[in-house]
Image (tube, rainbow, N blue to C red; front, side):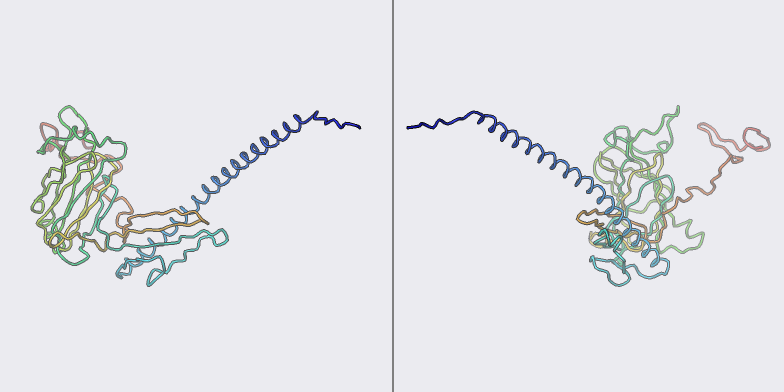
Length: 345
């Protein structure tokens, strides 16, 4: 009888081949996954930029309609839904072929807060109560400019006085991280004659000092007063109460710094939060590029009042100005009866 012998030579090679094939397959799958992920990230970056630009287009469309309404003198209504209605008839498609659009746009025409970037130039606001009720309080809150260490409030003045609004002797600069606000307020009931505006305008210098909590002043500022603002690492706050009118005209500028954000809010009646009309609208718009969304929320001036820097002084010159009257740290001079080549030609 013939016996069959099994020949197992080469079985190890076959097994090693299978193992290597599995390992190589896993490596190829991993590299393919990484490649797909990088492609998706690159695509998402591109789509995110397109969605952001689409949202900006929606914001610009909303601003154009708001300005047209302001120029025509028509009332500015709110838009509370994503669908077009009334005067708000937007073409939301940006690039139909690539599915780029702004999918939702809402407008709050009576926001509870007026916001503005602070600068040395004047920013003007009409603070008009949306309900028509008189304001009980107005709150001014502002932040330090970007780059300033707002926690360094120990460098702010310990109090206020006649010398706090200029550098101390020797030229030491203002070291408080917050700027001083100059706020000019005119009641809405003031007559528009020159003498009435002069007599009714109130000016307050809001001086940041260390301490917590808002300071409340129970009356409108006098002709030109300094008021102590309490500051924390978050912001500075001042509240004016005892007001009563439904409209105030306000102009704000900042001393010592450029930058930081100002927020104005208020209450009416028995402490009810106030809303403002006719000054700013909050536009909330979402841009869409295929499956990627970007959202922008911006407070815009309805009439474009603060789009351009405005003069903060009666005279602004690009060159030297001939001065007949000068104020020094310890004296004054009007140069009467003399000709001073260093002052006037």
